[in-house]
Length: 250
Image (cartoon, rainbow, N blue to C red; front, side, top):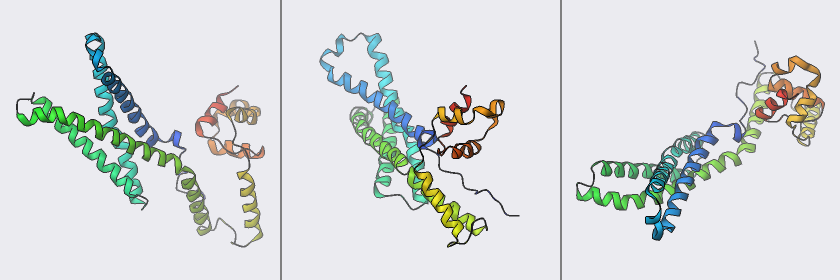
């Protein structure tokens, strides 16, 4: 029996991809921590005038923000680097970014051990003082690396979709689900696909209008079924979240 559905899932749009948030949220946390740290540094002359009950929470937020950005950000970016490596797409910068992330984590752990020792040894005193400055510098570089990996995830979306379409058509041809390469039906199909590139992407309101006559059956529609309906109106299928909003509309 021939399987008629391509086994490989379509690449997710960046805003619906969990990898986006695994990098974006730590970057935001690190940016918040760095902002507070920067502000307190600029206000060093007046820092004694900031009430302790205000200064202490700011220092905690700053510390945890930078720590979260430097550690949790490594999860998403590290997975992305090794994904690229597995597919032979990793470049020099990807490995530099991963190395910086690793060094940042190691230095942060050393500072943690030194702090737990309470500065009882000479090396722990020096580590707390100079290690903090060092880890802040590496944390900034680590955040830059995470942003580059995140930008690459967004920038490669079109390329990944095109590759997926090519692989799907190759699979269909291998399974006898496509016509001969030079046949007129293939040329007609290609012309239809080219025409679809010029179609606008449907909005939530378009989805609502196109499915309005289905009434109670609308909630049971799959994204693919919505795509078939939208094609009748020469509209391209939007993201899953847009489809859900449209089906929930009145």
